[in-house]
Amino acid sequence: MEIRVSIYERLKQAGKWREIPVRIPPSKIKKDGSLFAKDNRRGTFVISWCENRKKKRHAVQDNDGGNVVALSDALSVAHQKRWFLNSRKTHPVSDPTIAPKRLTIPEQAAIYLAAKSGCKKTLSAHSLALSEFQSFAARQHIAFVDEITKPHMRKFYDELIGGGNAPFTAGNKLLKVNAFYRAILGLDPGKGVIKKKDYKRELTPSRIPEIYGKAEIEALFKAMDGYDNLLFSVLLQAGLRKKELMYLEDGDLTQDEIAPGKWKCQLRIESKPHWKHLTKTGEARTVLIPKALMDRLQGRKATPRPSSLLFGAGTGKPDWHILDRLKSIAGRAGIDPSKATLHRFRATCATDWLRSKDLGGRGFDIGFVRQQLGHRDLQSIEHYLALVKLESVSME
Image 1 (cartoon, one colour):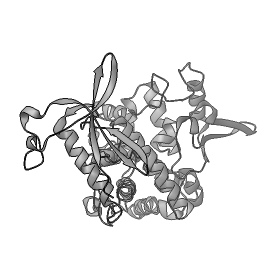
Image 2: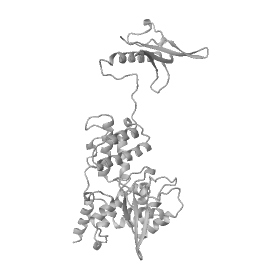
Image 3: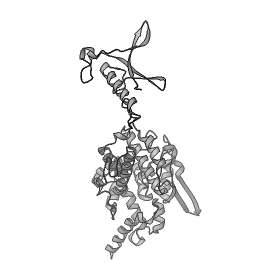
Image 4: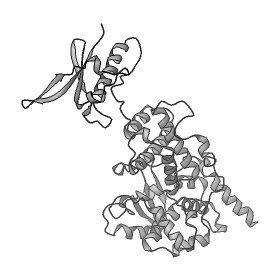
């Protein structure tokens, strides 16, 4: 039996709201199913039908969710609902009168990661990429998956580079976000908001890292004030990533006198759930630093601040403008700001650790440097070794 759909209009009569059946004579309906302009009044309409011996209804709304619509719109919705109710048993159709639920990025990211399979390292990498993208999306006021565009991905890439990620690392994070976008929207392999070829150059790992020369370091630090000098000294001497520095807290400083006049000074690098911060690998580590740097950090710790963050913003929250500070310093130092990146401090530190003492370095073991930098394998620091080797060969 065919299910019929009726239209009712909500009207206020004698101080009470009532739903009055709408009768539309066939003479007032055009051949295309619409109403003549003089009969197409606006009002509040409801469609109703009987299903499984129960009466059901829902209001007719416009695209913005408003309840005041034209009668022709109510007539169209009634026709669509009737078609759906009488076609769904024979055809796999969706209800055209109900707008599909928009997929929010945080909700879908959680679902995507929960269903993600693979080794622990792979899951951690996807979790980090999506976590950073969610923070970026919130700042850009992007709430839904279908709102993500190619320009957004480029802006996210630029932010990752500015935050200290190497181009290869940033490109891989974009691919992980694209995989999330493709999976949530049910797109075919190779599809998405970006393609791998869009970042072909960035996804080709550079074998020779960019580091700061001695003259550049001297010029940069000469142009810094006391606060900036300490902030960038931590990057240069501890080899931290941007976010590891951003979320460094008072309790992360430890020092022990292991022998008279001999101190073991360390920074504790770990995830901070209370700040919603996850380390790149999801693991914690300790980084040895010179006693002179620890003394300066202890002085910073004793300074009154709005939060426990050693280098937080004036509000007490994480400071997202560290790169901007560096660009300004580079301009004052006579260095091209586009060449001033946070990752170059990390690369400079790594090569200094690996460089032999004969060449003015620390001469640290490769395994120790891997642990200090927070890498899981030695392959991740091979390009630093290659640079040190080139320096050694050039000195012969």
